[in-house]
Length: 325
Image (cartoon, rainbow, N blue to C red; front, side):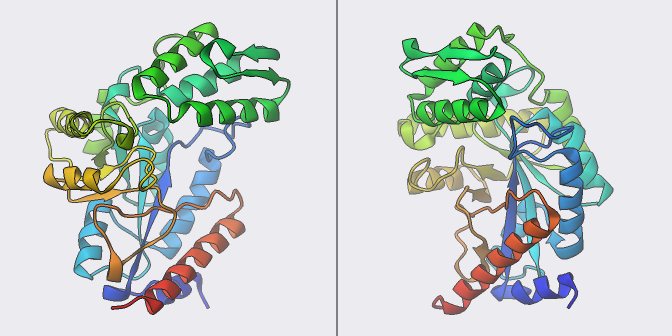
């Protein structure tokens, strides 16, 4: 049975359909041992070929509308990117254009034009530090011995885990101080510029909001959370001169990173849909349009990548068949 037929059977058209929303962050020029979960351009090319061959890929806003209306095409999917990395524009988008696939890019506006997110401050610090001890006890973060790539990955994973749920401003400040210790410049070219953002939009990409400074909304007072969501939306609309219709919750884990009151805020601000990082597929029969799940297998071979997607489609199909109508 051809793969496309199998995918269509697992995810039929109409009100029994499923929507696979794939989530990416970066696409690197070449494989980076320190970032094993970020695909290289070569890997992303076969992923995009796979998407083009087996799915009906839609812009997220259209996919969400059709999911809600019960009019999804068979094997429906959307491709999304979070944060606004420059390699989305320079590497990922040209590959997607070659296969005429749409994608949605969620932008955290504070980092446009030379910014760097706190997690990248940490990762790049660990990358640039010489072998030996990295003592961050002054920040309450312990000490680490950097000897090889594995130890560096383990170090930054532990640091990210510890810092992730610090108070938002404190987390940013500590990450910046650590980056300065490593001699990193205050600015970088890791994120898109406003010009690149306007160019990717003008060439057909869909742009979504991702707050202004990428905080964990659940850890903010509601007034601050609302300002973060509003500012990200309005800044993007000012840059693009067009409405921004879709939103991605930073970090995105339901209840831990955001909750129902944030979904209400998003709806009240005029967004048409919002996405999370809950790992499953969206089913037409039970879709909640302001908390759509997203799924991406992190396998780095085509066969494993396809197999995991098929398993997820089968699980979604089974869940849809057993859920009450």
